[in-house]
Length: 166
Image (tube, rainbow, N blue to C red; front, side):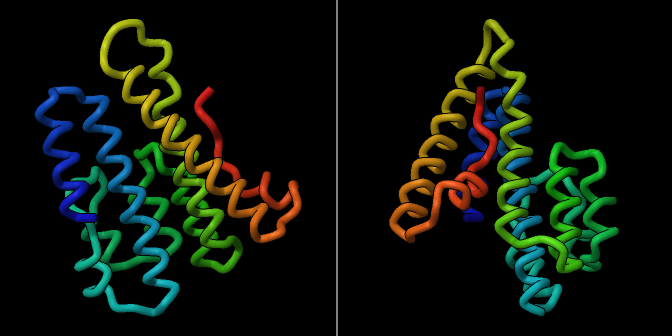
């Protein structure tokens, strides 16, 4: 993952598109937050968390991977589009929400970042948002197919679906 995100960030910066670079940084920040919460729930050390961190995001990784608490999450992500997901991550750490709720909140925050791109007439933003939306649609198909194969009812499957790009 580190190599993949490093290459994505390098290509985004090379494209001179702040929107695309912002999207990649947001994805990195999302993965780092989700990873940190999962590792904290498993009781792994901060050193292990730092080794798992993906460089290149917008948030202060030192703070995230040294004192991971519900309050730390909200302060680290206070100025990020991932603030709603950080609030959900804080709930997960307090035992008030599930990890799947965090995944959904992170995906929804990223989709919200992409949402306004469709109003831009010229530029790369609509294309980037369109490709990300297609990827999100494939995730939705996998959630639906997997839920049906697992025997879940429609309400349970619908609960797991993310916000789509409309």
